Structure formats: structure tokens, C-alpha cells
Image: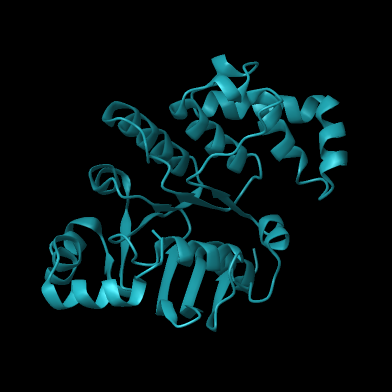
Length: 273
């Protein structure tokens, strides 16, 4: 292996460099930088309105940053379409699950697998007759623990199954980097613990993960590193035990008069997580 190839395989997978995002007069992300190493399970956390979801949207290209850059495996993504970023190895599991409700659970995953072949939804749907995508779907449904629901209709599935389906659909894109936006939201404690364990297992199998999640109990249990945002700025980064003992982080979660007033003023009218 060449020195360059070795460097690419061992260097940071994701690099966020001084990213700034503004919505009109609201500074949603303010000069934020962090890196995600290959094999990491990084928790991107912070109180409501901290800018976490906006940060994820900047990484995926849903929103464009005003300044700064995002790199995947050393490659700049700035100005690149969402589709191109997906093809370079990025996938997002969204907080609000929206499967196709007129096809089966397995076909939802097979459709995502077919997406790697074409950007045409019609051609992707036609490709569902191919055994390769159905085989991938079966393997992924087993991997996330809902293989018994393969032929069921998502319209009648409980939220816990739909959350796992969303993860399976993201994995069908064969990502280097899996971005999870509040996968545990709306689940009871037992369901949340079980899905968090599944996410940890997926990471152990070699998928690098960035996790946005308000369930700190599970974040601290499974994440290897944390980045903490507050009021659009990064206030801490490092291993969970060290980060959660920092006074700045405690103040962000527990509240401090001046910080609360500033956050409310800047994020009034914003529903960003």
C-alpha cells in the first residue's frame, strides 16, 4: 500500500472546519470545527436549539454553510449535491421516519439498496425484482433485528420497528459514515436501550457513526467521543466522562441566567434540535 493510500485509510473520515451557517439574522452554527476518526461513534449533543440538526444538514448538504468547509476522506464536499455526497459514502437516518407505506418493509430496504445503481426512482423500483437487493434487504433487516417484519406493511408497524427500518435503509447505501438524527426519540426506555445497543453493534462492525441524541443515558453508554454544541458554538469535545464533568457543559444543560437569555434571544422562532 502506498503512503498516500495508508494515510487516507487511517486519517480522519470527516472533517468539519470552521463551519458557519446563518438563517437570516439567526446565527445557527458559529465557527464550529471537529473531526470524526474512522471507526468512531461520536455523539453530537447539546440542549434544544444548540444547532445539532443544522450541523448535520450542513454535513449532508441540505443547507449550505456561509463559511468553512466539510471534508469526507480528505475530499472537500462544499457545493456538492446531496446525491453526490451519498455516493461518496454518507447516509442519514432521520428523526422523522417516512418509509414508503405502500410497499413492504423488505422492499423499502431493497429500494434503498437499488438507489446506489441509479438516481431514477422508477428504475430503482424496477430493480426490486433483482435478487441481489432482496438479499441485501434480508441481511440488513436481520442486522437491525426486524427480519420477522420483512413482508409486513410499514403503515401498521409500531415506532420501534420503523426506527430500525430507517437505520436499515441508511445502511443499504453502504455508507462509510452513518449520521443518525435522534434515532431513540419517542421510544420507551427498554426500546431505547435495545436500539442503542444495536447502533453500538453496527459501529463495532466497522461503520463510523455520528449520533445526535437527547437520551444522555444511552449516549454516555455507547459513544466513544462527544462534541457538545450550545448556542451554535462548540463548547466541548472529548471522551464522554471528561466532557460531562466540564462546568461549561453542565451549565449548558442545567441553565445559567445569562446563557439562557442569550440562547432564547438568538434562537427565538427556531425549532432546530
